Image 1 (cartoon, helix red, strand yellow):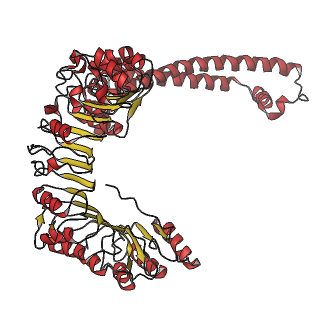
Image 2 (tube, one colour; image 1 turned 135 degrees about the horizontal axis):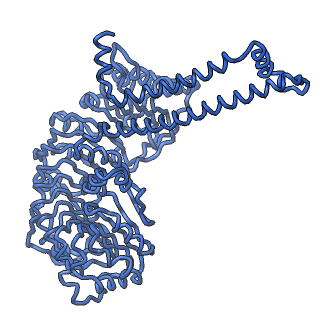
Amino acid sequence: MCPQDKQASSSQTPASSIMMRKVYMELSLSHLILKFFTVQMTSYDSVLAEKLESAAAASNHNILLEPEILRARNLLRDAEHLLTELNGALTELTARRDAQHERVRKYRVILAPHKRLASELLSEIFLHCLSATTLTLSTPPTPKDAPWILGQVCARWRRVSRADSRLWLQTKISLYDRPSSHLARACELLPPAARLSVTYCGSSALLSTALLPYLWRIQDLILRMGVTDYNEFLRITSPGDFVALQSADLHVTDGKPGNMILCDQVDGLFQQAKGFRRLKVEAAGGFRITTFDIPLGQLTSLNLSGVIGLDTQTLFTILRDCHQLEQLDLAFAPHDSPSIEEPFYLPRLQNLRVRGHLPTIFEKSVVWENIAYLNLASVTNLDSQILFALLKESINLTELHCRASEKGAVTNLSGSHALLPRLKKLALTNVIDTWIFESLIVPSLKELHIHSTELSLPPAVREMIVQSGAKILSFWFQSTQARPAGAPANTIHELLAAIPSAVHFDDTHSILDLAAMRDIATGTLLPHVEYLRCWPNTQEAFLDMVEARVRTEAGVAGTLQQAFGVSPIGAAWTPVLTSASHLRLAALRVGYGLVCSLYPPPVWDDYSD
C-alpha cells in the first residue's frame, strides 16, 4: 500500500470502518447463498429450471410430467427461501442507507456556507429578494406571505428579518369596510421594526373598532372620508393614538373642512407624533390647517396640490412655520386678496412644484437658494423678468421644468445671464422666444427637453449648449404646431454637431437631410446614439443609416438600439413603405434585435413634467 493510501486509510474513523465491514459481510453472505443455491443444482435441475424460466413456461400447452412437478416444487421452495433472505438483507440495507442519507443531509446543513454569513450580509440578500415586492394586504396576512416567510426557515433568519426595517417598508394594508380582524392580525404578525401603512375608506361606524385600537402602531395613515366621518374621527382620538405617525394623507371627500365642528380634544392632537414629517391634503372649499393642530415645524414634506380655493393668507400662515420643509407641492388660483409684505424663510426647501399661479409671497421670500428641483411648468402668471430673477437666485438647481414666459419686458434682459452650474435637466414648455436660451449658462446640462410653439428650433438653443460647454445626453423637441403644407423644413445639422455625446435624440419636427444621415451613418454625428427618432429625408437613406449603425465594424459593436423614422404632424401625406423597405426593417428586427419602425401614424407626444 502506498503512503497516500495508508494515510487515507488511517484517516477513517473506527465507527465508519466497522460499518463498512458489516455491509461488505452482508453483501458477501447474500452472494454465497446465491452461489450455494446455484451449485446445488444438478444438471437435470438446470435443464428443468431453464424450462421453467423460458417464455414457453406460461403457455397452457406446456404440461410438466409428475417427476418434474415434484422437482419443480423443490426449486420453488428454495427460490422462495432465497427471496426471503434477500428481502431481509435489502430491508436492513435500505434502512441503513436512509439513515446514512439523513446523516449526510445534517452534515451538509452544518457545513452550509450561508451559516457563516454576517447578519448584515444576510439582511442585504433578503432585501434584494424582496426589493420588487409591494405587500398590499386586503385580507388577513399569513406567515407564508413575504416577508414573513423568511422567518419560517430558522431562528436566526427570523431574528435577522424581523430586525431589518427595510424589509417591511412596503407593507401596506387597505381597509375598505373590511373586518377589523385584518388589521389586528397584521399588527400581531408585524415585527416592531416594520413600517405599517394603512388606508381607511370606511364609514365612521367602523372607526372605533377597525382603526382606533391600532392607531398607535400606524406610521403612514391615509384617510378617505367625508366631513361627518372626520368629525367622529377627531372626537374619539387622543394625542396618545398618534405616537408612531410619520405621514398622513387626509382626503375630505365632501363638503368643506371649515364646516367641521370640533371639540377641545383636537388641541395638540399630533403633538406626541415626534416622527410626523409628511402631510398631504385634498379638500374642496379651502383648508383650515388649524383644524387638525398639526405641528408644522416638524414637517419635511407638504403637499397641498389637492386643496381647492387656497388663499394667500392661509398659505402664508402655513408656510411661515414650516422651517424644516424640504418638499412643497401646491396649486394656487388667482383671487382677490390683500397683499402680504412680510417675507418668510424656508432654509431647507429643495423640491418645489407649483400649479396654476405662483403666489406673490414667493417673490419676496427667501426660498430659492437651496432648491434642487423646481417645477413651474403649469404656472401661467410668470413674466420673463420675474422668472429670470428667480433663476438667478436658484444657483443649486439640478432639475428645472418651467413654462417660458409669454409677456414682460424681454428686451431688458439683453446681455444678462443666469449661471446654473449644477443644472442637469432643463425642460421648457410653451417656448415662444429665445431669451431664456440666451440668458442661461448651464455647464452641467445632460437632458434638454423643449416643447415649443414654433415649428423650428431657434439657433439660440445650439448657442446655449456650445457657450455653456454642456455635454448633452438626451435631447427632445416637439412643436405644438402642425406643419402646414408647403412650409419649409428646417435642418438640424449644426445642432447635431453640438451634441456629440447624445445617446437619446428625439426630434420629429426637424428634417434629417441626406448629408446629416450620411454623417450619422459614419459616426461623424451622434457617435454614441442608442435611441433615435427623427423625420428622415427618404426611407432608403434612413434604412442605410440605421443598417450602418447596427453593424459591428473594426471590432466595435454598433450602439443603436432603437430607431424610428416618422413624418411630421400636419404633413399633407405620409410616405408609403416599399416592399424592399418592409424586408429591410424585418431584417433589422430579426438579425440585429433592433426596435425600429418607419412612418407610424403621427401622434402628439404628451409633455410630462
